[in-house]
Length: 213
View 1 (cartoon, rainbow, N blue to C red):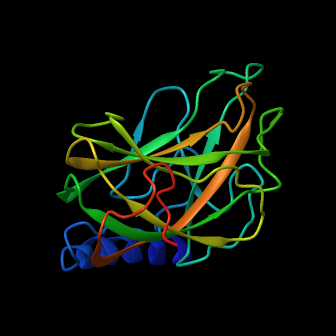
View 2 (view 1 turned 45 degrees about the horizontal axis):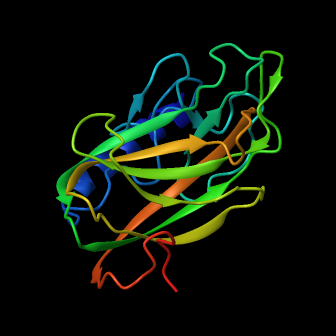
């Protein structure tokens, strides 16, 4: 009970603290909250039906320690031989102020893959990719802003990214687990410590790379 109480207090503190941060900073960037299956961290919302993200560790035999704080987010993609087949998990957050068209925003985030992710009779241990979308409305995936490629490593690794809206301005930031091949399969991705850096960078990077040099 003490651990659950601490998690609840920490999540509330992070949400309150976020009101003092720059406009494009995320609320609850380290995904703190009550851990459990189909439990989405406070300030984040699921998109889609039939498969809900989890706050980890502790569910589906996932035991990776957080890279920051006491918990993190897990997303899965589903193959064609499981319930809700060929679906994948998505979360979103509405920003206090939108990502403006033509402006580059620097973030870092920690990614990993769990080598043990067993739900029911299915192993969700394949290598998934994280895709980050901008949207003007809830769950509206309008412009792909960044894609990680296959996350094969079980240890946490920090990724430097630049989100660069070219088509429009977006008030929703959407995180999506996705396949790395044309064939669908069951895989997972772990996400933690999604930090915004308030410097504004010139849009001088390759449009399809989205990464800082």
